[in-house]
Length: 318
Image (cartoon, rainbow, N blue to C red; front, side):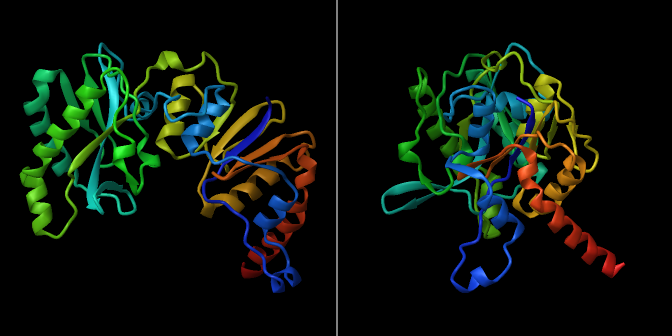
């Protein structure tokens, strides 16, 4: 389907009180008022699965494969999982995974932990790749057959409700415990504790899946994103990655945007400049809570007035 799909997690209208109704609507508020909406509590990987025609479950996308493409992991006779370094804490007889304050590791510490891990677990056919402080991968010589909750969905959750499932769940549960013991006594973590920093006390394995689980084609002319997952998807399908300022939109084609809340208004104004004469363009927005649709594009022409006001302010400072 032609049109533009924009994913912007965290975008939401302001709750307006009685006095607020005397004030002009913000850009975001006016957009929500003029859109057709339905509840849609999806994270970005759920939305991608939906756009690809896959089930919107935690396990539909081969996330490790897509992230690995972006990080340059070549295919071969191995299988791939994400092995994210995390901090677990005990609270009221339950173990929680804390992601509000991510662990910051130096690349040197990452390599040290990966090398020591590989020396200990190489006999199991495992290889840990700590390519970046944020994304670690586990190569296996056997199919993982692992069903686990993606890390973005695990923030401040009790891990007992999300332990590994699948045919090899007993193996992965045992490995999870063995890795915890390995990390507990590792010198890198001992030094972090001395400095008052949170240790890496577990690895969260997730993202199982292969390229064959993706559909053969994805109708998209360009992907506009800085996110590794979306760039990995672009690499898989050979779709060009662009920026809003370099993009030339065609109303007969489809485009996928993934941006943060801060960039929404500037990005939308750039889109409007390009499409102000495309009256049959379809526009969809996913904000993580709602799915909003505007079609045709001319219903969004209230942005014309807003854009002129913004440009007038900018010119006044010049």
